Amino acid sequence: MKRTLLVLSLLIGIAAVSIVWRNYRDEDAHPSPAATLSQEESIARGAYLARAGHCAGCHTARGGTPYAGGHAIPTPFGTLYAPNLTPDPETGIGAWTSDDFWRALHNGRAKDGRFLYPACPYPNYTKVTRADADALYAYLRSLPPVRQPNRPHELRFPYSTQLALAVWRALYFEPGVYEPDETRSAEWNRGAYLVNGLGHCSACHARRNALGATDSTLSGGTIPVQGWYAPSLHSKREASVAGWPREDIVALLKHGISPQASALGPMAAVVHGSTQHLSDADLRAMALYLSELPVHEDKAPEPPAVPPARLARGERVYAERCADCHGEQGEGVPGMYPPLAGNRAILLEPPVNTIRAVLNGGFPPATAGNPQPFGMPPYATLLSDEDVAAVVSYIRNAWGNRASPVNAWEVATEGRGIGVR
Image (cartoon, rainbow, N blue to C red):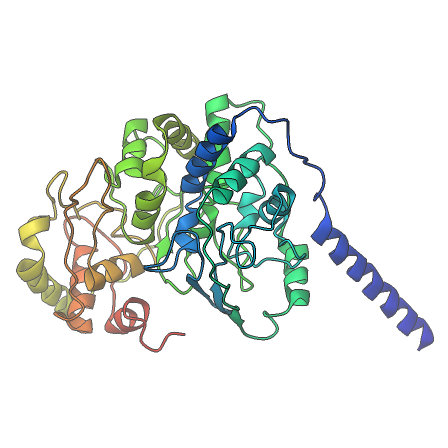
């Protein structure tokens, strides 16, 4: 019995040491480099990088002052509230040093030593260089200070504890600045740095496990709580851009619309608040990287047949509500309304994005290159769940399309969120 207790104590001690080491490693390995930019240039650089990271998207409450925090971020574990990043000395980061800011970005630890929740995507931001982190810090310190106390998170036990977060970090968080691939071009490496670092694309386009950790690929996943499906950027039948002209990829990121696709839902917000503001050089670098991601030649399983009555009902709804814009044969109108025939976004599994677009409407983002986008009005109050299920099933199986049918229960739960917590 004593030997068992001794072994158990030893194992617990080793685990505790391992957790502590994994949570504090690599913190002091990257001191600030010698300044090569003036203060004004550094601030301008930081403003650009803040756009690349879409920082204001989380750190600005609806109707609030930019970067003053308070924005609610719902998660499966409770609600987090983004902190104040303005240089107010008491409620913001006015008392933070550049080292404090670097530690938060690179290691996910606040000035007072607390572990940060990965809703702040430091598993991606850890790849940011110290020079870029210092530029971001200079920009945030240049903002007008706003006195706005941070709202406490509302998380369930044990997710609300630092111990649980420390264990999560030990299991799933690996700090480390992006290391260029010497076998690739400088442009490809720049694209990889932006996509995997500040762009934090994997925060949406990667699968999450039961504890909210993502894998290291861009193989698609459902966005927690929001319910939208961010398609795989490796899959030809989902959202791989391999084989696209690079100009079309750049257009999608810059304007929210291209000959190949349109950005809707959460991606529209990313284009509006972030990628449309990036330089053409950076967009082309991202496009190069995305176009050269490994391609998965996955094949969708043969879907079940659509019940004839549902198909007929969907055809009637389509003729009444959709054909005027999308065409009788689902051909769409170039530059205005996307085609539905052969549109892989329509055929995604799960079909939640199409359901949500019908219910809530769909508009590409307003951008400098597409300031008045054409879109679709919401039909949530005009169509019943059965009508939505029917029309979505129809467009997923008309004009050569082939995908699983949708039922009213999916519309109610995945689309309207009824009964879902």
